[in-house]
Image (cartoon, rainbow over all chains, first blue to last red; front, side, top):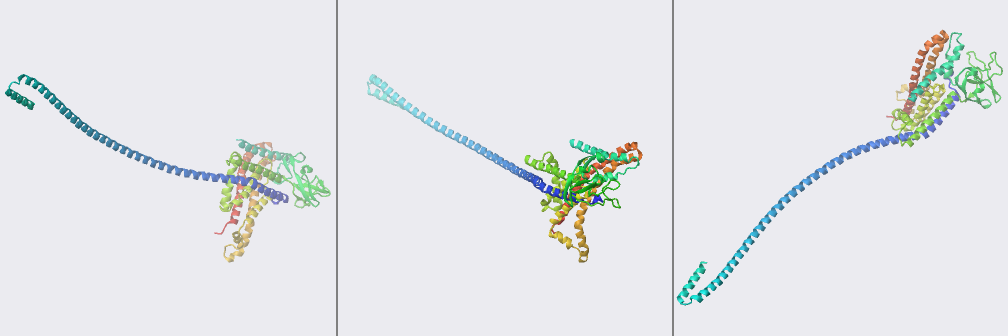
Length: 164
Length: 365
């Protein structure tokens, strides 16, 4: 019977000890431990959420990058196309200009040549005229004996000149 | 590895300790060719005024403990060593004008004169001591065990709490070992049985009761010879506290369920008394379950060890040697089982307490 008869002294000490233990542990152990565990669990949850967010953001970023890259590529293509067109245009224009310039130069040159030729002919004519006069003078000085002969001579001369 | 070695040495020491304690008795009764292990076992599982290691009578090696008595003349205290290990009522201690005597581990007022056997106590017809008793508030073996548990728990868990601060919330070493247990009590016992909304308030209480019982159970497995959770007074207090917590947190719904149960009117006169009795049977079951499990474990281990001495007393040393390995192997097996039981009973006590608290705070659906 002793075994199942609780003793008052032990009841007293157990109650006292357990209540004191409960108060002390609650204050100095369970509160800090549970709050530390809670804090860590929360931080883990937050970190996992953040990682998930970051992953999504990463995906967004990648797609944005892809888009930007495509845009850049398109822009480059269009720029190059434009440049090519411009080049062709410039070349064509330059060619055209060169052709017209050349033609103009040829025309000018032709004109100049013509002018030169004409002045050369005129010059020659003058020289021929003066030479003719000189010759004529000499002849006249020598053969100015009869009118017939003179007239004949003049005619001959004039004819000759016209033939030229 | 260290823990494993420590555990094995505990097993060994326990076995040898038990054999040492029993050995002299065995020699004494060898002639009668009969060894009764019951007194030895009962002595071990009962509370005591000293922590006894080995030896008999005057040769005992033990730690004396203070005896505190609430007597007719006020409080009297002295060390248990003043009885000189006497438990037969022979050695009278006189304090404060009163004479005290130790009979089978209990303190009585001594008779004026000794009887023919030199004993200062008188016995009734059934052999029990009939002397008057002062109220005993002594620091007994079990009280020492409880204080030791308090110190262990406070040291362990304040250091765990500190380690969180030191390591920035990362569990290391001891904390890493303790945290799963704490989280287990919080999540699988408290949250599971009380419910998400209300469990937080009860977690410190449940943690305290869990670790208190657990450490006391394990202390009972050490060779120090404690049997604290196998003492009905201790389990009574724990069950009573569990009852108080349950009733103090009970809501209207709980009381309504007891005093006006949802049964047909004709059944109410039957159900109401049953429900009222039910309030007390639950903690009563808690009390008996823990007490019986732990006490039974101690009795089984000691009985198996006693087999050796029963064999020696009955058939001599050779048989005792032959029986030893078997008895030892069985003891080891039961001991390992007891380690499991130590955890299991702490778990069950806490789980059922949480369950009862959960029932008392449950809202009506």
